Length: 158
Image 1 (cartoon, one colour):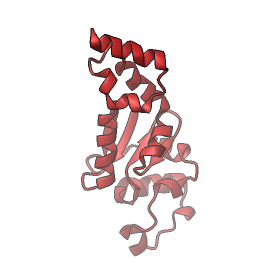
Image 2 (cartoon, one colour):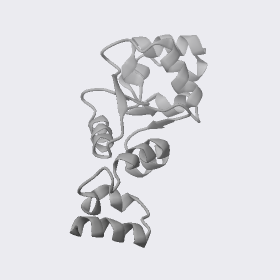
Image 3 (cartoon, one colour):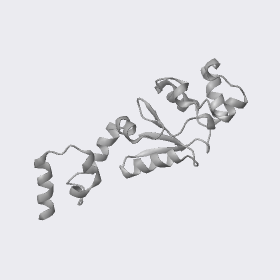
């Protein structure tokens, strides 16, 4: 299941959660300020990011600027401890699946990030499971063969 790391005041985080809810894609929400992120979670994020700390750390954050912190000079353990003490340095939202991460809200990038999760949602959005399938907004995201659409319309007429 996808984990979404959020903070309550983050508008992009609210947009991501809303997008996932609208798409009926299950996720686990993790507020970065409610509990200390554990070492394994942070290692997981760092190893899945393409550009290491650059992808998940906001070097423009107040703490980094005020303390003149250079994250590139930190060891992995120092970085993890620093993030645990200062979770506000994390960019948000951060979505993590079993293979990679996605940072920030961009609906097109999220669509490419979650193809498997999207397929799961599509299983539940089908003529067999949805009375309103022909008018459902999820159908717009699918490539529907003309004969599949006519089957749906025939069901609706009956």
